[in-house]
Length: 450
Figure (cartoon, one colour):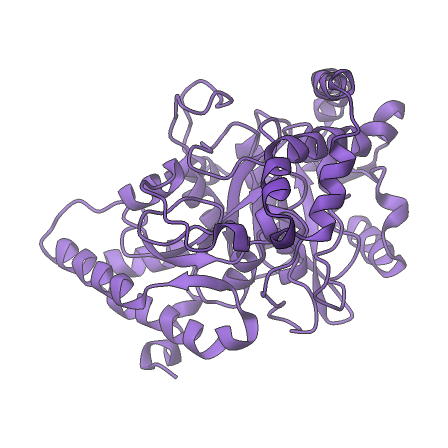
């Protein structure tokens, strides 16, 4: 075990590491060395990484330390190691998209978010495992809490690496449930921001109306820090939200003026949750103290269709974007992906257009919930991580919120059979800061730490 790992540096949150670096209590070289030691010791079991470059990471750390010692202005993530999901382009590492079709693929430029991380001083330690083309085909990653179980997908390696203290931050993506579900299974915080909040330039396109960039952390404050560093406006992404981004980290420093009001929602996926999850979640929702309002709230009646509407959009786009890949490389593409491509090709253009066009009307029907409530409270997954590595679990508890473009966050606040399970919070699109304030309050209220 590395001496820096013995000192627990790899367990620091990004914000705590930044403070220690600023005060001169630690060096970036020591922090990166601790993470490298953890990866070296643990990754044969967890298998979170597809490519790493320890020598380059240590050299970057030494450079960061020298700049700090010289009194140079330092970025918000200066000297802090970060993992990047392997569908996000990096010029310093291969980006193979979780598929043998793209083995050895080497982008010529960084994705917008990778450039943003580097501009903030972050050290990209490597690429994390993704499922096949960020869909259902599992990669090699195991759940760090139980290697016989899935870590979820498609952001498998990013969730597992943060959960296992291999890095404090990692990027992920979500088109249905690819951030929130692995966060729930692995017991970390996962954030899927509002659709259009973060640029997708240089990221594999699965479904343009749904794809969203987010990530994993071990504190709510780190969520704010990460998003503040990657939220720059990119004119090349035609779906980006216009307008200036207020600092989420600063917003968290403003305390809530009252206790939160929570709408406990049993979504259309609720009947498919396992009984232990239902019991644990209902108990969780019923045991808030004081004047916290938790109101069981029904979704509008026609929301029963929403899971299928999300699938029509996603599967149609998978057929359009991945169909040519599968047609040209039938022996290198999984049967499951071929099956979804075939299903996606059955949807007419009219069905696809209708599924897309209904999103705004359905979102408007949902908005009255937020007149009285700060956030929606619901489960992040059907249950704990399933046993076996042939599947990454179901995204049914997540896809409807992704379809609606709403910010979602999973908090590691439940334990079922000794394994983590997430509490999912969802806010109105424009209320990402409120979402983080409630999440921070909830983590403190329930006395949990990752």
